[in-house]
Length: 370
Image (tube, rainbow, N blue to C red; front, top):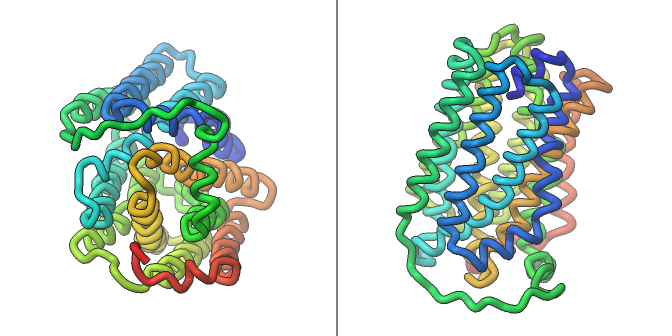
């Protein structure tokens, strides 16, 4: 979608609008989706959301083939995809403790992330090569895989637990936010990810780098998009086999600093191979913080609250990713792509240093259960 939009308009700012269009539904629906994840069958929520995404992919394919695809139609479909993802993320995350026992949550989260990273390696690379046949081929393939995902979600076996359905009040609607505010470790990890990735959102500008700086074409864009997932997959598989058990806090801050440094290296690189390496390191560092953040949230949250807490966590993550994409596009439009990415990487390092001072208990955290 990013390549097609950039081909239509040639504007880096429009790439940022893709992130903004995904972000707006997420922030508007955050308080609703948490309630849905805690009150409904989480598998059914995931299935419905995959069906909506399949319909959105089919719409993109038909619009491209029919010749009526435009900037407005692309952004409208992105917003629908963002809404579906807003409902799916907390339900999917909260499913993990329904499937495994408490001691296995951290390695299970690592396996979940490794599965996602595997898809992010194969998906963008396949999408880049399918795009050579036309955007319609990429969109139809994506739609078929969404249908398959929805079907698989229906057969997940979970421990059936009776959930108490509290009356919906102002207090219950905002209870996820209140819970996180009362746990400084959770607040520190989520806000650190928010501001670090908000500044280090270099991946939103990959179409600019692929076409104008590295001259790699759509196939090269697919490889660039896959590179962070390569590093993330290797790291997540390692963490699944060798779970983090000690020095959780210091490991978190080191990973964020490495993420920022890798972002800066990518921003300055004009060599395709070096760019791939920098993005792989970036992905490896990012997955360490993802595993720590998601494991802490699931281990330290009671089941009745997991949907709402996961919804707020998804808002933090979505804000950092989608709003970070908008920030990167805006900064690139004002400063140029290279200065925007470089300053973002350095800003991420500065945020890590500031958070070490603001959340000393997070820096000193040794175990997930501590």
